[in-house]
Image (cartoon, rainbow, N blue to C red):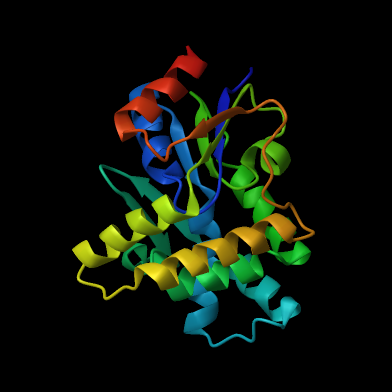
Length: 218
């Protein structure tokens, strides 16, 4: 039996998570936020003060971690039974995740964890290499992006609303640096799948992007 898969890839801050969850909810499909898998590993590494240059130790932590995803109105992520949702969006978490995601051994360990989310009635997978590496045979693929300035602006608003101090110029520079690192890494770099629908959300509403993605499925 064929299990349908929709992949939504793109750089950090493009709105992949929001769009993916909305589409998954409308379709009644399962949801995979691959970024949370790497961010969860980052949190586990930071909690245990693991040396980010020690790939063998990082792999041990990755193999041992138990993850649970609970999709309600918001995504809840549990690491070894502890709710870590509030820590996923922290800049330190994101930067650490980006660093360890470049390690081939780590990607290999976490690859199967991602593939296991492919279950009936279907899956919406959100990440950076869902359509190129994890689910290359997916019937429907989207590459969602936005300008670095627009993504930094969105991130700035999110942080300020949460009462977290932020600097827009610093955020823009950080996003550009993360883009460069993600695109230049040897293991599964951020690239658009040749058969993906390209969407630039810089000047689009969430509703408009969601509708365009749903039209692809239809």
